[in-house]
Length: 216
Image (cartoon, rainbow, N blue to C red; front, side, top):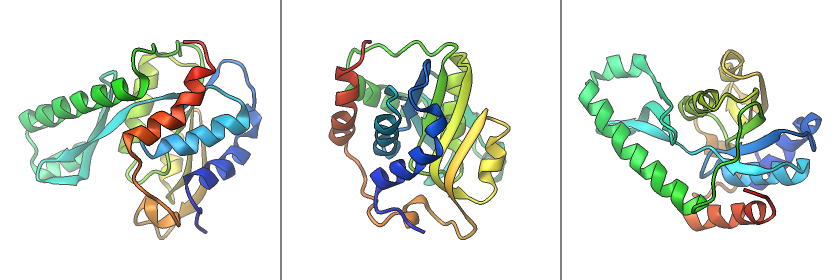
């Protein structure tokens, strides 16, 4: 099974989330960039407000595609101690990568949201959306960031993930939803016919209708 694109993935995932349709005190938060078109589709179908949870992967120095963890824009962080130990990564290297990624996250947040304040999420229900989960590092950092905001419930919703990983997220989130749990998983992109990298401008355009029609 494959999705035509992220929008179709969002439509199918929204069908799994019908119980949250028009629920009060409920937000959809997208993990940029790839999670934004999925989350925007879900928010439209369920008639819920949409916002962002900015997170970034912490790549191993010299092997940046390998994640040693992830960080959220509010400082919440998840570190994969097994990878750190295996690769012999020093605390100084971790701090350097973290500082660089934090700067990138703040720049993206500013570009996407401008001066618009974040909604008050304390005691709210939050549906966290990405276009898929591979290692789970960025989603774990996102959950930790919501815990800092003291949200009432965390719902993880993704179109695709490896078999077993969503069960692990049951220990992190209150509810988890996934359309495809694959035994042959190698990358998120293999489950999409069209899986282009989104630009910052595309993210801004997807968010604009939600920001215009809501009260900060």
